[in-house]
Length: 136
Image (cartoon, rainbow, N blue to C red; front, side, top):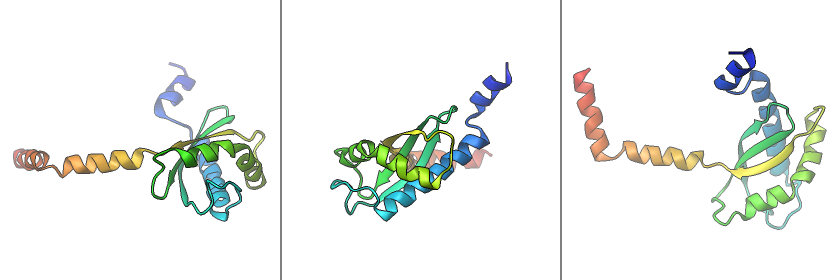
């Protein structure tokens, strides 16, 4: 197994994580300042939870969670429509050889976490957990 294959199996490199975090901070500050002039984004509070950068640093997937959710996908469509403007504003804060193409997606990890929490609070599961503690 080559070094490259081993790194891909372990996840993103420290460099990719660091670049993703810098991009996340830049996008969050752009959205917080309200630099994007779009009627669908006016007055909306959007949390940027994670940015995943491709290994070649050319593409970035931005996971966002609007306050109150985005059931119709209006906010993510508006963000994707204005991604070129956000890239331009981001280039003032983050200095990179290539600015990545931005693709915005809804972060569903919050829903998954609440679903797992609900499963763990189920009386049947709680009973099994208590039975397992007695065996150990």
